[in-house]
Length: 188
Image (cartoon, rainbow, N blue to C red):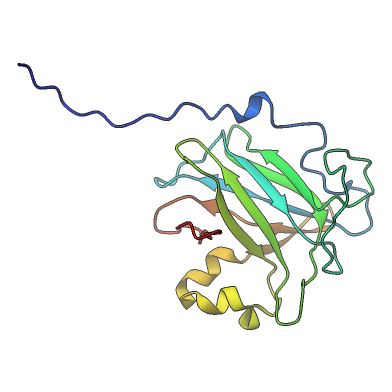
């Protein structure tokens, strides 16, 4: 009987671009909003190549630290903060959101963007956080629980784009600069 070599398992897709993006998906507020900031970055794979077919979701509180709890986050009017958005990466792995800087959700909590990543080769989504630079990150319980050398993977870089504040947050799925990812519900 002939013996065949094992081949690695294959995932199908993702075909995220077929049905998940929608008009205004990356605009949690319009660019003309008085508190508008940009959050942008690039998604990289384990070899350091950009990922052109990832989908990044953003969940966050408003500037006062309140979580938006109203229906209709898929509808965009340019001024109402929705607290949630979605952005597919472009051909060179970049994503971008127009939003407001989040406020802390409680005492001893540094302000952060909650980020979810979907991409090829992932059997499940990945959760991470993008903390604002200069916030009280030393007192944040999650950051304090991480080794000092890994905390930087969760801190945005402050920039300015078109006269508005901007934050850069690159996401590394694996490798030397791998972003810290979080487990929820007992999953590891």
